[in-house]
Length: 337
Image (tube, rainbow, N blue to C red; front, top):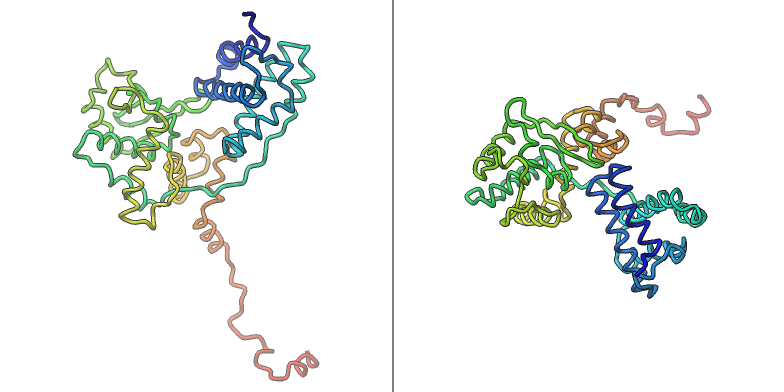
């Protein structure tokens, strides 16, 4: 069977261009690959085009718009997920218009599809009391509980994304003073985050218990399941939900109903901000490219807004009552003014 032009270019895009020319991370490549798996699924099920019959001329701007609507309406994807899929498609068609000049017109039509404006969501975070309660839930009498406590406390202390935690290996830790952790973030960008003494103690005990402090284990997953495989995003989310449910039974008021891996990252950022840490340092700890991204925490912190208003407040209300309050005859007062 002769490969189609779509098969040829999508293969080159995923296996050569993204990896060798763009230097994209494995996570980015996986995300883009998943987008095109979904697109192929859509073309097969909704357009009745067999995968071996998919050619570039059958994928128009209108087809992509239908695909994006299908994601939202039938697969119940959020606007942000829709935009993420469109970003992957845009990346492919930017590559394609340089590789295949005969498709430039349709490439540019597809590249003209705009991202949808997503509603701004409130930053979901735990108070310091909420974090303390959450970290009290793992049973430290079991090895699983000790692993979970180390995992949750490190996610919070490092302000790390879930994938960044999953990808950690013992070689990325420095537990001697000054203790630091090397985190590989989006776009394979590395950042060094300092660790507090209490966190280091958790890690030291965890590494020793699981023999992860041995030289042969340097590249092993830092956090693994019973099969010694690194945890998945779903696995970490399950761990957080499990202990959040337990904590909510103790004090429902300080544990929100909606909680995820990112909640711990948001919590760390908010607590740093409330402690007076400069946004520039918070940006560097979180690994944001732009400080504008970090500013969402300043906008979300109502306590800091109130304190700023109080500090800037100038007493403009006079202690004495205005003269017309004491005058029974307002008309008379106005005439004599």
